[in-house]
Length: 285
Image (tube, rainbow, N blue to C red; front, side):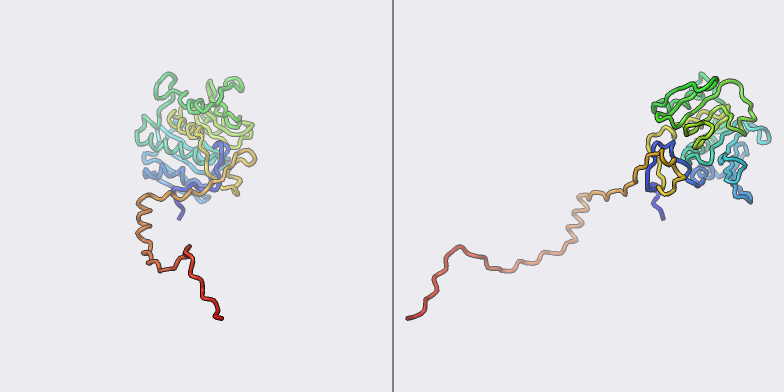
């Protein structure tokens, strides 16, 4: 059985926004399933997870209609339109999705005031800028790539968080990439390595959980031979070295000494002497 304390991979990928999916959705589903949320499958292999009150729904859609692998929606009315929606593409690092679902599980335990909390500028807990702060703290640079869009870009220029101002189509926010928030990696927004979107009313705490994970300077473990798990030719790969054995403690040394066999008594061995011996008698004449 794999050691859970050891990284699942043979290389570290840095910066972590140049990693890709781990290829399994289990880690990101776990925070919700641990709360007892319902899990269903369809005949195609898609997975659907529902909160007990049916006000939050997650779809893990490897056989979906587009590259939106993860779709999460929350509802004020379980039978109404979503209050907010988030989407992660099929290449998005699984750790970023896990950060979102972990925060979502925590918000759900707090109740609707947490998981339906709308961002409000000028407030302490729901200020949208809070979602940007973890990136600013890691020297990401603010930019204005086009009218009506504020952006903050990674130091290497290969990841960007965009915030679109003005009025947006609520339906388009939930079904396309034309959302209030868009996080993506690559050199072109039209052909990103991976992307994540969130609609206007997505709670700031959930957004911040993702940006904090993205901004974390520690690398992510991946397998070198699985080149789909990182951006080949751009990501920096560092071998994961096996841990060194721990240094023995004084108690370990004492125990080892107690297990040694008793020393045998030394045998009597004549030593060379520096005293001259008497001359041997010569032959008789």
